[in-house]
Length: 476
Image (cartoon, rainbow, N blue to C red; front, side, top):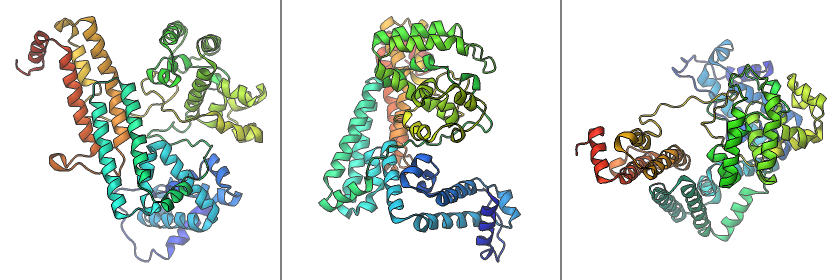
């Protein structure tokens, strides 16, 4: 936090600190409104048109968010007082520190990013108050949300493969939004159009639950060369995003096997980088179409952007697109910032290289990208289908049976992630009735797990089922 910001907050709370209150047992950092958080992003600052003074104020608020209780104590400020004051100052900045036009544009960007992250149907529900929905319309919205949940339950318990279920869930989301939009009056439709505004073309990096540790740098030896492209392109999620054919997938998997022979997982041993760069470039050029290659480049630049803008600009596709000179690449390697190295036109073009956001596969063995710690769950991922696969020899499963169980095991964690993503929003209503203590995502997860277990049993014949029941301790 800047010294000026500390003094400002200390003075602001000074008049309210006549009575000393005990600090809360659990420290909660100040809550930052979503609009103010977005204003820390360069692309949003440019689109909204922040002045240098406004940018400095946004930076001060960002610093305030991370202040520790010990720092507040030095100014004789308890953490709960600090939270109150920071929240008030943030609200004042958003209402008085921005022009009317800037605030409107910021609200439009917030709406568009909610649509992108949660879906148009969810953004619509979040904007119910701004749209001025009547009581009967709000009831209709609630009913449509309930119908959407029922449709998702049908899809995830249908026994179809993940990709098909994912497409059907996306179609359900689209239909839900269309039905919501149909109920609007002409005035409300105009209001919805105003809430969206013109498309926001910039890129915003949403924070993950675990960020790259401070001081953890992307290896400078990998600036200007490819590194793990073949590992990522072999993943099902990436292959689906690129729409690879079966022939392309087989060729890339064979190339990956050859590539792995020369790769060393130890991040301290990087002499393989330049040797394998040429192999990767050759494979990608020969096996991918230009549009597939361009999308993979976007995905891999998004990966490097998790470290820093400098690491992202060190990707070969960024080097080529921005026309960076060898001197500029070397400067980025030497820890100089993009603001110091890139020209104005290069800085303006940088964020447009990332394309639409893509969630990186979680199971790639990536020694350079720190992974979030897995949350311990009551049920281990993949438990159901893999339990049956573990008995394949004892049950004397056929190749077809093993194939079906592998498909179920492969889809299980992705289907669970889909359920969490679609149904775990905080405004999702709890389940009524016997399961009233559960949220919607938990209830649907239980239905899915019951369905996938039944699908596993259906793969077995009667004799195999009988033996499996004995092994699992379920009687005959």
